[in-house]
Image (cartoon, rainbow, N blue to C red; front, side, top):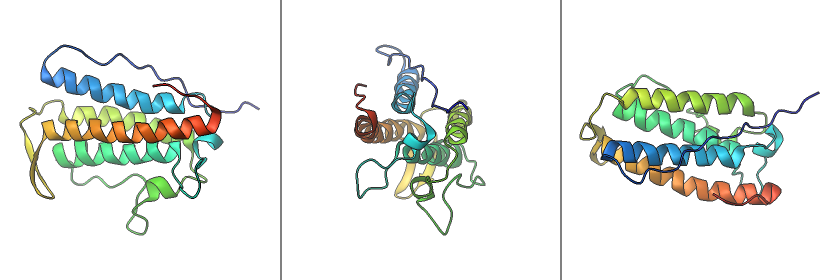
Length: 173
């Protein structure tokens, strides 16, 4: 019997020149792949392991959370696909992305994450960075969404660094 492990992630170096849209997309892609690199080579059980008590934070929870965040910001808000529902969160459990990982299918969750990235990119590919949607505190531009998402990944990739090191000692970006 073969044990599934998360596949290798293929990260392209972050852009150092280019127009603004290419720079934002390049940095976002770099951070997306960084999260996947933190998962690469780990078993489903390791991805579901909360490694710092009493926290329930896991690498799989981070992947599931970022799936929800990608869908929410790029597809529902900026892309106008308001009919989309959450993937893991429910009205009964708003933190289902983080909470419900004990029996989650890690392989399927990683596939869902990668599919959501493609759909998120497609949802905003035709929109200018200046396009706006209504936010909680007023309008947000697509440019703001890109910056916010890069910040969101940077923060959670820091969590992923610590989780991965605790699981098997692996460090690095």
